Image 1 (cartoon, rainbow, N blue to C red):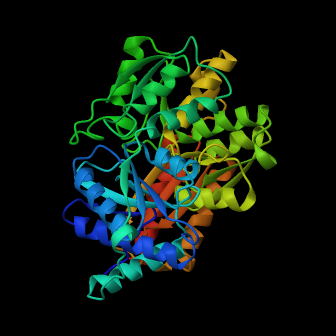
Image 2: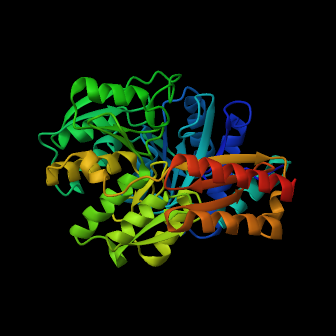
Length: 452
C-alpha cells in the first residue's frame, strides 16, 4: 500500500479510493494513536467533525463519526463549515481532535479526510505516519481494543459553531467595511453561508454568486480556480472588489473594480504592509514559497520587508511561521495564513482583511495591489526524464547559469522535480513574456538533453 497521507490529508475519488471503510478505519486509528501519545490523558476525549457540501461527505462524515465514537471519543458535529472553521473550533472548544471532510479545490467526485491536533493545528508528519501504520495493521486482521457501555463516545450536533466562527472573524477585523460593495464567489462550497454573513455583519453590501451548493456543483466553473464569473459580476454590479474562495474556503483570490485578478502574492503584499502599519508584522518578515512571483520579493525588498521562502505547500509556510514566530505567510494560490487569528489558511478571514484595508485607506484594490508588479511567469513540464539528477547534472547546471546570467536581477529560474510524476517543472520569470518563453524553452530542451 502506498502512503495514504499527502501534504493535505488523505484524498481520492470518494467511494472508490476513499471509501467509508477507509474513513472509519483511519478515524479509529487516529483516536488510538492520540490516546497512545497522551493527548486524551485524564479526561474524556472530544472531536470536532465538519465537512464541505459534497454529496459524498454525507456518508464519509457518518463513517468518521462512527469510527471516533466506537473508539470512545465524544463527537461534536458542526456540519457544513470551512476547513479553517473546523480548525478554529477545535482550538476554541478545547477539543482533542478535529476532522474535516473535503477535497478543497478538487472536482466534486473527490473527497478527503484531514485531521487537526489539539489547538487546531495540522497533525505532524510523524503522527500521520503512526495513524497510517496502525490502520494498516488492523486492516489486515488484528482486532481493535473497543470500549463498551458508558465508554463509547457520544455524538451531538454543535449548531452554535456557525455563529461562533463568524463572531471570531468579525472580532479580529481592524475596522468595519461600511461603504464597500463586495461580490463573493463561494464556489458552491463550504463558505456559502459563512462568508456572506461575515461580510454583511462587518458592514459591506454583499452580492453573492456560487452560493447555492447542492452537493454536486462544488467548484464547477466557479470559485478561486475559475474567476471568469466573478470578474464579470464585479464589473456588472459596480463593486469595489470581488472575493473568490475554493470548495473548503481555505483560499482567497480577489478581483479589483475593473475585473482584474489580484493573486495570492499581491494579497500577501497588501496585508504585509497593513500589518506592519498596525505593528503586527513580527520580525518585519513575511513568508512565501519558492514559487512566489519575483515581483513580490522585489516589492517587499523595496518596502523594507524581509521575505523568507519555503518549499511549495502551505504546510511548509506554516512550519516556518511557527518555528520563527512570524505573523504572516502564504502562497500565490491564495493560501494566506494570519497566524495571530488562524492556524491554517483562511479564505474568509483573508478576504475580510483585504476589504478592511480598502475601507480603511480609501484606496482602490488596484492601487493597493500595485505595490508589486507581477513579472511574467512561464511554467513548462518536461516529462519522461530522470528527475533524480536535477541537482547533480553538470550540463544542466551550466544551462541554468547561462539563463540566470541573461535574466540578471529582473528574472529568475527554478527547476523542480515533480513529487509524484517522472517529470521536471521548469519555471522562468523575466521582465517580459517573450524573454520568459524563450529562456523556458531553451531550459526545457536542456532538461531533455541532460536527463532524458
